[in-house]
Image 1 (cartoon, rainbow, N blue to C red):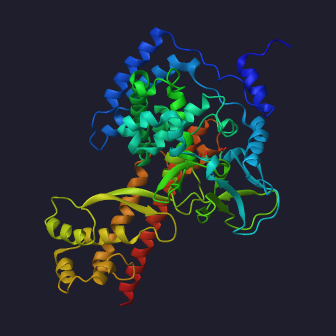
Image 2: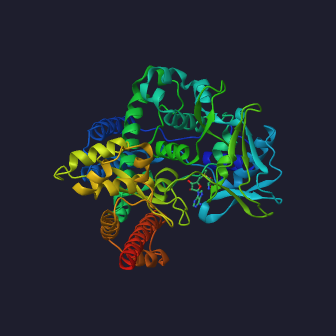
Length: 507
Ligand SMILES: C[S@@+](CC[C@H](N)C(=O)[O-])C[C@H]1O[C@@H](n2cnc3c(N)ncnc32)[C@H](O)[C@@H]1O
């Protein structure tokens, strides 16, 4: 066998559950390359800091930002860190957990393919049985970031003071470049890449044409590109960054990896003094994948540990999943890099507004104000039996009011109860108003479906094909879920209209 290179040695050490002896190598960029990256970073920072008016502009400049980022990436290829192979790192991770008194007797880590690595029950669990208890001492938090040498930079930098997630991202990168890191067995277990919007190309993202999530993905990409450019310059120039291990190897790929790691895995925990909440990476807990249910993770302040309980009974051999929270599929894609077709909490944002040209604009906006609603804003249409929540229903009823409806409604004192009745499906303003509301919803839901390039049926077919990569499949899956939400809202509105007609005919 030939001599092993540094990367092979490190991988072998990781596989044997040992620590590598020296910091992972990277090819230092030449002076000329560094200068080129600095110039590109300056340009990128300037470009991404321009204020953008909401609307089509928000997505138009994505190809240009992406092209600057790609130029930076192409210069930095060899300076980027390579994660070890995960499977080989499981034994060292479990040993590290056990050494820190984390009981892993009820679980195992396994690759569940579609959802990535996850946690498997090694014995039957009853609902509410604790299965992962993680002490604060092994978490990665903003406090451990401060203690690790980032304190001087945090003290000087307003962005770091305001954004704990960025502190965690930089902290992760510094620890990954230090072989003596206490968290090395945990860091080695992290995925090598993600499917968050930071990994989408403009061509892939075009699949979201018509979706409100398109601009959210671009905005995330722009924000992270701006942050990268900003911190690249800070790391090169700021004296407080001089001793950080990432100073000379802060690549865009490493930054998007760190940001995605934090976005997809962070949780809130109370600060040690219990005064406020802070973000933390919680080893092992963050191996749990998501399913529908209720939140079953809590912080035990007396024991100073995070406790996670089974959200239902699990049998030996089953994957134990947890509920991440009531998020739409667009939110799951943007912040966690996946789409969950069975998502009970799926919803789609729709923009609604009263036209300034409406002769009843002032009276309608007064009424909306009393409900704490703006004249123009985004609302949600929800998946499920009742797609409208009280806010959007009240808005639509006011939006559709005639002069007479307004007079009638305002003829009696506008008590809290009366205002609340606007959001209650069982208390219509008038038959005519109700007809208008459901007709509007039916038409708007149909129009919003037409804004996409494909129909739901076409998307279903596309998803069966093997011509698409993982990113493309996720994006097609998201737009299909959104269309299904819109379609069920359209059907709901039609049914409500039909019920009204039947009632009218009966009367
Ligand atoms: C907290 S981590 C869970 C562990 C992760 N699977 C891993 O391999 O490290 C969250 C990530 O797991 C994946 N994930 C979790 N639940 C999922 C689900 N229901 N469907 C698809 N992917 C899921 C997503 O990639 C998400 O960003």
